[in-house]
Length: 118
Image 1 (cartoon, helix red, strand yellow):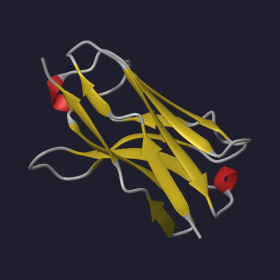
Image 2 (spheres, helix red, strand yellow; image 1 turned 120 degrees about the vertical axis):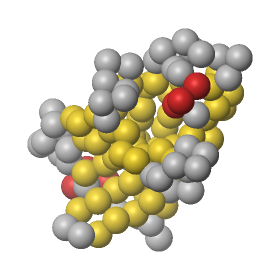
Image 3 (cartoon, one colour; image 1 turned 30 degrees about the vertical axis):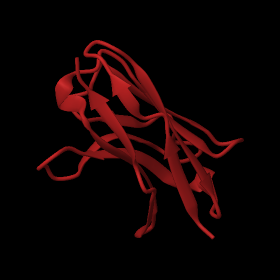
């Protein structure tokens, strides 16, 4: 059974940091491109960061809005995807989801809420 479970969300002040984690099971994690998406209030879901599968994990992409502040990484030995978020802004408030994708197949987690507020 495929599972993606995000954690690490919470409430943080502007300028603060959070680290999100996504634990995967039930599929060959290392063979999938992994991504973080987010959906803010009244907004469409958008890609935040993506990292290539095993052998291509040097390929990392970021939304312009988070470049230089967020960093995506993966631990293929433990099936964990991470997102380090620094210098958080109120506009980063959203529900954050991890996604696994390979050859047209996609899996999504239920999401974790991040709220940036003073």
